[in-house]
Image (cartoon, rainbow, N blue to C red; front, side, top):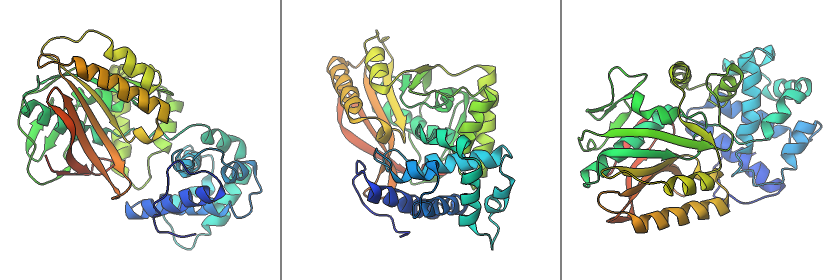
Length: 359
């Protein structure tokens, strides 16, 4: 199977699209220092050659768009969960990145023995909540405040997963020397900052609220394990962060509701907005998972609210999403009135390791 990333239509379906999804995921993992995850995905891909299990047949005959559905990561998450729970001890050498291991044989054996546990992992998209992305949201708010918008932000997040980024006001940030948030904070983020530092402003975050179609309760051990399974094992700092987020959620759960993106945005934008507050829609690595009809509804709701926006009650839209043409993630901001044209503020690491500031 090719290890080079291929530019294809995210909505592509069929057996060839399935294989492309796996080859692209392998390439992406290797390019992002995720060797173990690449090994697991590559071994899973070999099951497509002769799908003998129901698990493999479901993957090979995937009816949806495997790239948009993140199919390889669904399968890899299930394998990782078996390892984390100690259910499949034979996976330990792979996750230790040991050499001279027949990955294909090990993964095939695990699938054969644990198929019933693995099949449900194909039923929903990965939960890729990552607290490190909140640094981008904070930097965007600093920039918006510098444009003259009220520095008090009413934050609305779609695709919130477990609501880790909804606890954004509980963390401390060092963004190129610009410090924001309580000290020491539930977590401290110091991403490698490239370029000039963001503007310095005192900002306030008012009652962040988010939605997800399948919200994760961090205080439930089984649900927390599921979230951990989607973290690439190479990224040890992310495991430390998830433990810190779990502890913080036990102190006070994030304000997270079960709803799709369109219903949530329409309902929240219909509510009264306090004067002197910037209403801000934010999301990270989620837009590709939002169905096209919901994307259209969210966009229409934002455009309608934008038409009502005033200097005292402005509206902003902050997105950290993948640009699959240039192979990196971009922080893009729009605001109303006055900032209708999208402004790219930064290139950023998907998990918050670095930010290249352009703003």
